[in-house]
Image 1 (cartoon, rainbow, N blue to C red):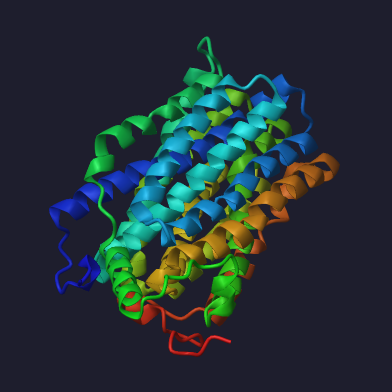
Image 2 (cartoon, rainbow, N blue to C red):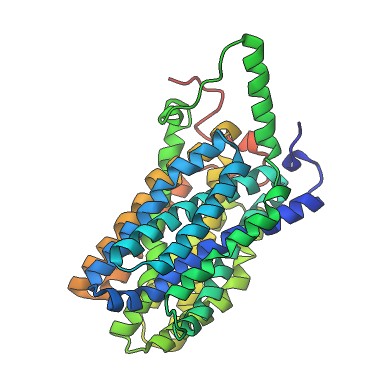
Length: 432
């Protein structure tokens, strides 16, 4: 069965438009939850009695959930994209609500770790949906807009946090609000279809099973590492690690820097982040279109160099205008880096391995950078301050860029069946 992306027309069908909205709303909460922790970290440290180093360890522990998401994401190649996406939305909803009920650092950390597990699995499956269900000529734009919805979630969260902190429930109300996705599931879940590529693959597998009268083998934990794509998995994992070490930590810890090194009040720092998010968010919606126009590799050059400049600018200067410009660039490149790496990760693997490759490259291996780097930043901040700690991570986007330029082929405008065979790894190669 031909998939929507194989159609000669790039116009979206009515179902694709509804799916576009659903995936965008689901991804909205990835940005909301990320910004919630970044905005609330100083308040949480005070209430929970944590030092700077402890705050870094708290973020690292919570981010373990992004690695555990591997086990859910890879199930999308077995259970289907639709079923796993529904599970992740419900799981995040319950975990976010329980985070607001937490009575200590241990219960809060566990609930937030589970929230990250479901949230990142939801995000990964949404990207797979986008890659498989939309036309090749508009794939970058679709992935870009869906990822940019996370920026919108960050904006809404940054605007709401100062207001919600003044309510009776204080920081807890921020997480209670995260239970809204449950309404989304109740309304739209029955309208969601399985992707045509996965349905066609499942149908072919079932036909083959009946024909040869042998049971279909379930993929083992290490199955993808026994395919010709194993090297590509490790390359993508290294790129994700470099990206998470450098880009994500800037926004997470910048408010701590503003309060400790720039003499800003909580309200002033929050206002700067909110303004930067509002200024940067409209531009993030153009990232995908730019990738469709100039290509993934050239787009990566602009984004990763911009991320380095944004990191240096936001951590090294005291002038409010410079800081606002740098933070705005942080917002754009944080989303842009996700868009370009999502595109590469979705396009460089075949349908039967697409979710597993994402799970291995991003969740199981790539998120090592997201888990370990906050603890390292916190320890360095304890010793040398947040200025030095954040300046030191500016090199990581450049390292990611070197790997992209040296190791990844251009995939712009090609069908998924073609992009999976580009470069030194070919689907026609024999498995060892």
